[in-house]
Length: 229
Image (cartoon, rainbow, N blue to C red):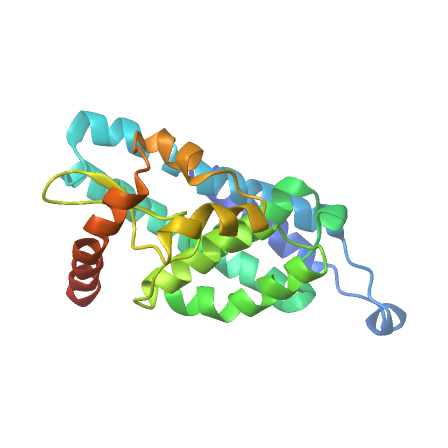
């Protein structure tokens, strides 16, 4: 990992926090949105850079290889560092809007929480729901977080955004989904495209009747995966 790149968000953030307000500003603080945006843009780059390398490493060494395990360790380290900074921003300023920090930085708030542990996701899920209500966050992104939290709690996802791979067969599939027949209605409500288009990137074909037949087995498989963690 490039140390200079890894430290950049920390340096920027320390500078941001180092600008202490005057007594007058303490009652009406001036928020440096530009600095916050720069920090979040750097975090976004770090978040996506290593994830973009997953497919090439899997193709060369395999999903269960030592190289892949090492790469995921690197990703987890970056995620942990990023979360410290994003939590600081959320706790001080709440879920900042695209008007305040820009589209990329705003999405970064979601990305870092989406890649966090279950406890953290559940902590900030209500904040993101409220942010969507007032227009400070994307309903599409919220749907992805809702799905991930539901599955981690052992429940069924709503929007079909989370994809799994059967470790025995290698088959890619939509992780256990509530009421599959109406998934496109729910996706449309939050601005997502059809499930057919979405899962085609994993070369999965959507056959709702076939999915319903396989669903009980996938639910059982998911339960086993949860208990083995």
